[in-house]
Length: 371
Picture (cartoon, one colour):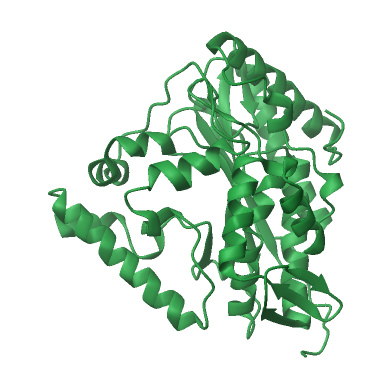
């Protein structure tokens, strides 16, 4: 077992929010992009991404995320716009993409199914790779994919209830159904060379699909590289020196901060303890982590998407893996009003949760149980 160290582990957050007007209709961010040095357009018109830099402590990450969000909300107030912390728009307005070569190519390759991606807003957490323990860290983050249930934030797509985690179902089960290796969770690896081989294989699959769609190879290679041509939920990001956990929905800042802390804590456990893959239970111990078989993880993932924290199986697993499940209050449970939702009700819900987000940011509250 490695010697214990108190060296801080850097982590950062990227969270996407829908932009609406005062009537709850989706609109473009416009001037909100320039409100913060860490706000960016996404590939669809009504979506804004807010990022932090890598931070060594919880307090640094919390301050930076709230500072960025507060600056955007100040500008939004001036322009009659709001931010919505829900994973999908639920119903109503169409979601149009911003024309680009990347989106054109994906539309050519994926076809109509790419429309599902346009309705998805998520959160990405980057955690610094731990030298000598990168593979165990990646495997641990794969095993923690079912923690998406902690922040499921919309059950609806185009007015119909899909699952507790509609975004995850759209993204993994529908958008990339024809190219499942591109968007679904990948199994454990034995070494980083295996990751590289998989990445290169998936890139060639993608390039082959683009050629079949009459997109020339030079255009593809100018817009995609192996790392940017896959959308699997857990990825090595060599550019940043991180393992990126892309499983979570867009959510309230307190929720994503808690998740980022948990993932950094797991990285520390991997660095300072042992990791082994064994059986079907999964648990965190004083010695380190016991990861269940990958098939078992997939069962938990399916339950996390379909039932969220209503699944006792998922709750028990996450608690054994060290999560304080009671500290989370997924927004999807509050938004869920039955099998369908009207466009008018969706607008009202977007306005309601824009208020919730603003209160959380203005008060700098991480208490997600006080909605």
